[in-house]
Length: 246
Ligand code: MN
Image 1: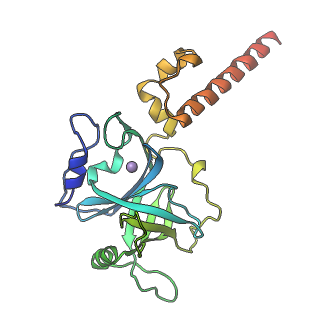
Image 2: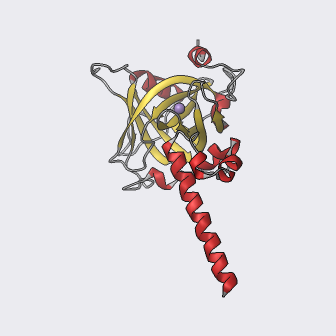
Image 3: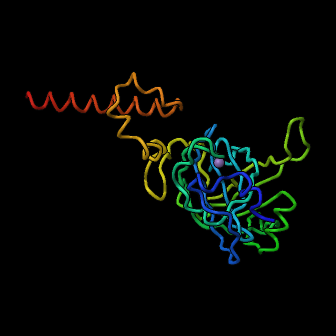
């Protein structure tokens, strides 16, 4: 039963996340969500079989073929999760801020390259590659483009859950050496940064509260972001004052 695990983990009267519904018409979209939960990670999701097949990627996808990014397969998500951006409240599964980091379409590639190049494949090939643990696909997103592979790691190490894959960029025109995902902290839906999305429920409080009263900002990165913002604002005010005097 697809989405059973998704359903079991969540309290839908508390979380703004979409309900567990399998759709009959499957498209070929993909989404990458930046998720500041217990640990910051990116969720990579491919629309397949009426759900979103999902992997949590701690370091996020890369356009550099030299990067092999660990991708833990997690429970299937409903297709309506595709444009979910916002805040999962505390005490809920995955509590934290979610940004829609990239969206687009994907197509399966044939497992057999032609003249060293990957060519479009069929649905059946995609299903077989997923089952085999070597899925090749092409992305056409706003940020991610080109050919990729998701490869399941064999040989279970002690403590491994057997859900570890590697997300790897293939060599093609879309590759970017030294790709740094931190340079792209912007939602493709709302153009907001993660800090801005997180601020939705309390940014006014934070800016009016003296810095000593910010005990509630548990997340270090958030406190850091707010501190930087304060500094910037202060600099702006000082410059404005200087201009007035001149
Ligand atoms: Mn996540």
